[in-house]
Image (cartoon, one colour):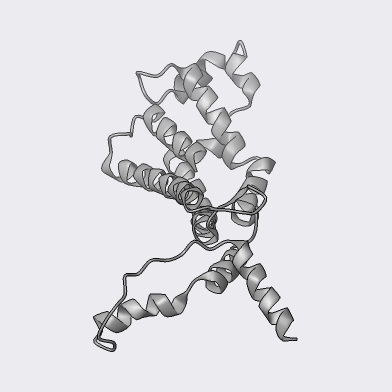
Length: 206
């Protein structure tokens, strides 16, 4: 997410549109997603439990919540970068054109968007965006962003299987007058060890 937010901010500056309200709105959204994913990772580490072996196991709810947000937003993030870059990422002249004796000067002249930015830097930026958005690898990275490390369905299974929904519903029951009291809501850390304990109990029952 930070890489895409970085690309969006850079191309907005190089296009001279970084101060436009709608541009700030889109870049701030990318930054927000990146920070929320990072925050979920930090929080899951903070709530980690120490295993008997000495390793620490992060909170499963938070890790999956962060991963889910990152996966669900990946295509929108690419869309924002493409929106700010414009169609030039798909129609950029070949590399040789910018150094050709006959047309190199013209290629650099008409590539220039922001008078404060040298055309060579704009060229480098758009060549990078070309690789990021319209190359063969770009397609792989987008799908990997959604499914890499586990598809969204796995995050759904994990969160719905581990989350204490009864305790969660007690908040609404209290607020809606269904129950007269409410204990302090404090979601406990959830790790795979909890699921292993459930399996052991089930096996003992058989």
